[in-house]
Image (cartoon, rainbow, N blue to C red):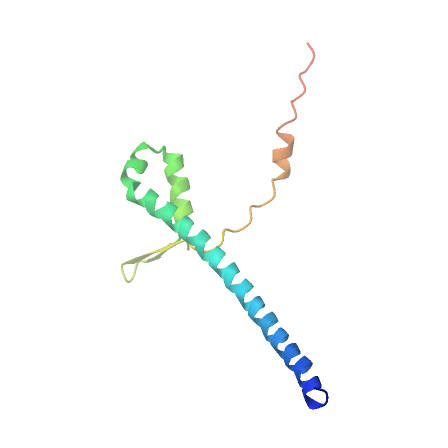
Length: 119
């Protein structure tokens, strides 16, 4: 069983192994995409639940909370007075959330108690 067959088999095994590596990489990429989609579905489901009870929620919110909620939902508003148009652009709820900014330096000083003047 020597000769040509002895060199073809290891070469073919190498090709199969290389193809398996490619397929494993593709499977991992698909798994990552699937996880991202599942997270997006969860966020959208939460948003839909909130929107279904939006009237009830809106009625119990304080004005500051209403402002915060609008800012969470609305990315920007474009107004064209000449055309009489108003365009409302909502945030993409399926997009990944941006990272939180680091705390401001003033926030760290809030823990320090002010010194009281001696009488």
